[in-house]
Image (cartoon, rainbow, N blue to C red):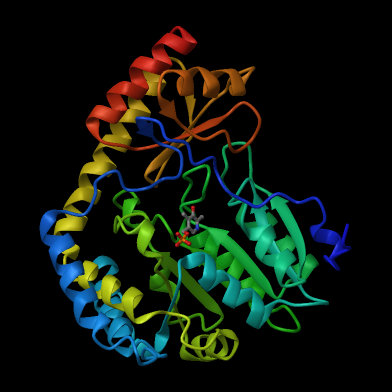
Length: 365
Ligand SMILES: *Cc1c(COP(=O)(O)O)cnc(C)c1O
C-alpha cells in the first residue's frame, strides 16, 4: 500500500459531522425548519440567473455589495451601525473562523475556549497548527468572569473563542463576562483577538445583548454571525463577521482568491432582502423554544436555559438509548454535550409534536 505523508496528528481521525440520516423528523443540526417561501425562492432564482450570465468572470473578490447589505441588516437587527469595511464574509462562519485562526493563530500560538462548547473549535486550531486550551464552564454552563479572565492571563492566547449563545448548551454570555475577557485579552503581551461566535444571536431572549454593542470600544473583538440558522440558509453557506477594519484587513490576506462565489453572493443578497419575513419566523421559533423548555421541565427533566433555536436536556443514565429510541420512532436529535445530555433543535409544530410523543414513549414521561 502507498504510504501517504499524512500529518501524524491527523492519523485515524474521522471527519467531523452529525449523521445525515433520511428520517421524517430531523432535529439534529439546528437548522431553521421552515424552507424559504415561494417569494424568496423566486428572488434567489432570479438573482442566480443574473449572476449566471457573468460566470465567465471572477466574482467581486471584496463582495462590496454584500458587505453593504450585511451592515444594513446588522443595524436593523441589533441597532449597531457598522461600516462595510468592518464586515467580512465567507462560506459559512466556519470558514470565517478558520480565516481568524489562519491570521491570528499558527505554530507557537494558542487558542482558548471554554468547554462544553462547539466541537469545531479545536479542529480550526489543529488545522492551523495552533495549540488548543479549553477551560471549563460552571455546572450550569455559565462562565465566571473572574475565573475566565484569570485563565486568559495565564494562557496568554492569541485567540479566544466564545460561543454566545453557546452550542450545545444554549447559554448566552452577559456583556460583563465578555468585557472581563476583553480586558484580560487586552493585556496579553503579544495581543489577543476575542471572537464571539453569535451563530444563534437572532434567537436570544429579550434583554440579552449582542457583543456587536462592544465593538466600538474594543478593537480586538470580532463578532461572527451566520445565515445558516436564523436566515434559513444553511445550504447557501454564508457566514460573516463584524470587527474593526484592521481585523478584516488581516483576514483579506489569508483568504483564498475569490473565495465567495458570484452565486453565493447573489443568493445571500436575495435572502437578505427578505429579512422581515425571515425575522417573523425567528419570533415563532423563539416562542416555540420557550414552550419546549417549559414542557420538558414540567416532565421533571433538567433543561439548560436557551437563547438559541435548540435545547439541551437530560440527564439520562443511558443517553444513547434515548437517542436510539427516538430515532427508531423517526425522530433524529443530537447526542452531544456533557454525558447524560441530549440536544434537540426547535422544529415546526408538527415536528415538535412528533418529538414530544416519541420522547414520552421512550422515557415513559
Ligand atoms: C451552526 C454553528 C455555526 C455556523 O456554521 P456555518 O458554517 O455558518 O453554517 C457557527 N458556530 C456555531 C457555534 C454553530 O453552532
